[in-house]
Image 1 (cartoon, rainbow, N blue to C red):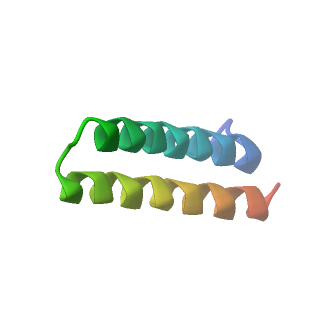
Image 2 (cartoon, rainbow, N blue to C red):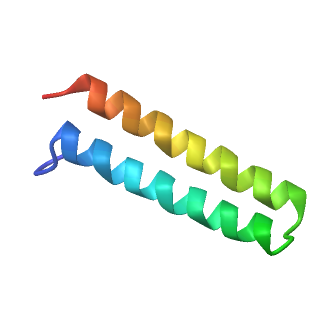
Length: 59
């Protein structure tokens, strides 16, 4: 990607993962359907994994 280093992109993915994790906690506390909570956990885990790969890759 032009203009974005791997480190920046890694932190971007990490921020998205944190946002989905907070959304998951909120949904679970409000009693949302279990499959929706699980889907959000899976999405957060996917973005965390992307962040890990980008941060490990470095520049």
